Length: 321
Ligand SMILES: NC(=O)c1ccc[n+]([C@@H]2O[C@H](COP(=O)([O-])OP(=O)(O)OC[C@H]3O[C@@H](n4cnc5c(N)ncnc54)[C@H](O)[C@@H]3O)[C@@H](O)[C@H]2O)c1
Image (cartoon, rainbow, N blue to C red; front, side, top):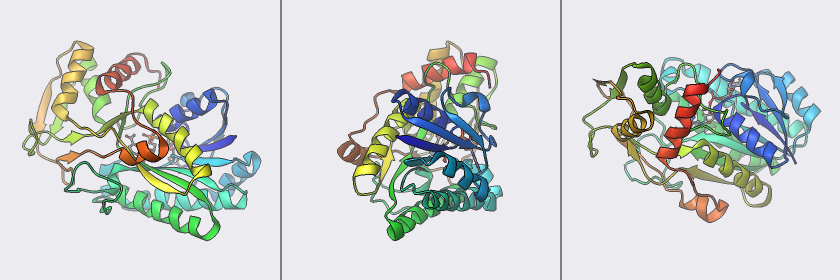
């Protein structure tokens, strides 16, 4: 089995690539290093510094590798930036996905696992969110991912490409002792909390008057290693069963204040916070059901928030990029 991983020099893609290699799957990574790191590419993976927007180069890499399946992580993924630069998101996430699908078709590859996101749901009223919820994204990041999902489904309808769409909630934690989160800028709460704890920086808390137990937003967190396991199951599923879409979530939520508390306990440091107004488009609570993933993929997360935070802390202390 050979998998071509787009975005495999990024946070989740590099961990999934390493997990694939450990299962003796061959891995080829395509990444332009816009947000990823050459050092994150695991040993044993072949690496193409290639932009998925450069269709010819992408097809060339695909022709050389002739993968059995593609895992497509490469994307722009910052909500705030997407509000300022929507076209960047449509270009990279929609046109980029079109190029990936076309290059697959040209090279006889007919299975894809696609990284989608909780952001496709927007601000649903009913928690936990199920896959039956009608997606109504509230920012260009979510809209571009939803458009890419639709494109995959419609393209698959024309030529039988098999797919599994994974809508993951907040990825967190580090894996294999050496692989963790390093976004620039970092907008994710756990690394921001740990940075505040380790370097005495102030952590901004956006919204303290939400109708939640402590007034701060509640989100659903999943360990990156559990996300990697979901990909293994999804690949197997995509190759054998009818194509489908799954929430990759824990089924329960933690408030910002709870995350801060866990980070303080893990680091032994007090985190200084600054209360700020709510950000537009930030719902009070986003928690998803993982029943479908459990029933159909046989996947459920095994690691809890404390394990995510303590592994992320190890990474923050020792990270090299
Ligand atoms: N991190 C999360 O909590 C989270 C949650 C939901 C969904 N996702 C999705 O998971 C995927 C991976 O997220 P991540 O946190 O690992 O992000 P990341 O930024 O660490 O990784 C993305 C990788 O894609 C590469 N890339 C971007 N545009 C490219 C292009 N045009 N050509 C080639 N490579 C390109 C970047 O260089 C980077 O290495 C994304 O699709 C994201 O939307 C992430």
